[in-house]
Length: 273
Image (cartoon, rainbow, N blue to C red; front, top):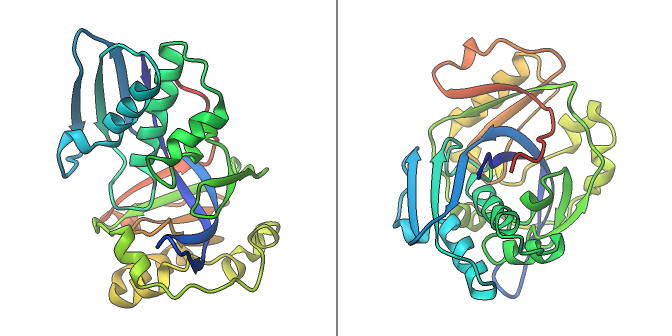
């Protein structure tokens, strides 16, 4: 079985407060993006994991796909499998690629072995693997709150617009990004801010931007250039470092050729498993 774990962008990201457990309560809208990895899972006589494409630092046993399989194996009788992950989505970019790989592994195991795990329980398992993982179970626009694991589907269709995503080859650490944040309650509710696209540029903010931009002026320049090219909204995704611009017409990407970038329509993904 082959599937294509996709990435996501964040439309606004408010860091509200630090919790007693050391994590942070946030508020953000996650939207699926068709920039994807390739994931193959087949039954086998013994377990194996192979990773190609972009190099992933760390031991293969720490990969979230492997952890997802081990998690399911604890609760269900599943045979050994071969996993082949071809990595396309950049790491440390705020695009959720690793989280998508984990969630899609859970989904594939559920389908491949007819485990009949409900969506609610899949999201619970996904939350044990990472804060962004539950989002990719439904893989639909959603308002995420608490640590990012409480999800409320949000009706938003941006399919008539285009997106440029720019990865400036800068890996950002989520834990380091949080260490530089001063939590605060947002003046406007995220759902209210999302209602009028024409006001996104003034109402939707990513709280991770200010401290990162302060130390990395190149990111500020990229965001400004996206607006110069006609974006009606530009922002950093997640804790960075990828930035994106939303456009009414497909823009030229030659301005950004010194960086890795993609141009996509914002069509929602279909179930590809």
